[in-house]
Image (cartoon, rainbow, N blue to C red; front, side, top):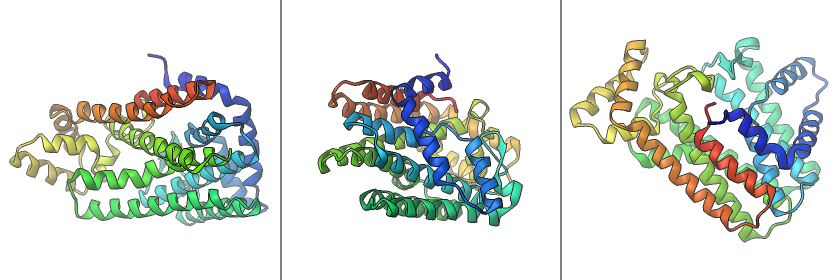
Length: 327
């Protein structure tokens, strides 16, 4: 299988020049005369991740027409929001490492991390208002609301666990799928698509976002290539899809045992291994892959209705990337 990074380079090809234009636009939009904040932003820009979200905006726009200034503003909005949520998440999770590097909160403390995240959020809002793109602002604000609600729901359930699939899907639909949906909708909006088309693009991104989060759940159990600590979600008592699907296949006695292990506050490596072994033995990973593949198939069904183009083919490859990525 071709390495994920090589696949991602292929996916970017139809919008390679536009991605470079976006990166320049984004850097300029983030500039500030506050030296501390500027140092933080330069640090973040040097350690950019996969840039899936702005890529979704650009490819969606290209499937509808041509990338334009509104598209670049939209891509910058979602990247600002995404980066801000990562800064805030690191504070909430007491995270010291992200993408193989120390976090801002570890380097400069929680206050700087939170305030830098706040700056990015406010800068994004101003960027939309400066260009009078209220439709983009509405789409993104809806995503922010959903993300905040789901993160709070996840925190609530980590203290008082709820082992239902309904709660799990409510959480991932808000914290991951809603932003993916905003990206694809914003791409379509930037090219003046009609309301029905925007709605279809939103639904496509929503399904792809759910698949993306489920892949994250699977990678969490493996660590290593993903650049993350193995079973970090389990350590934080977060209920993932592999856990839930293993739980549904277990006897009441087994359920009680693994509920207790999940709720253990300071989990030893032995406890983590017990949880991981049980999840794999009960088919939690294999069944999660089946759910993931079903969402990918639904996403691709939307693409089959779109006119053939390099952007559509790249989006098809992106669906495959989401399903099989190793980081």
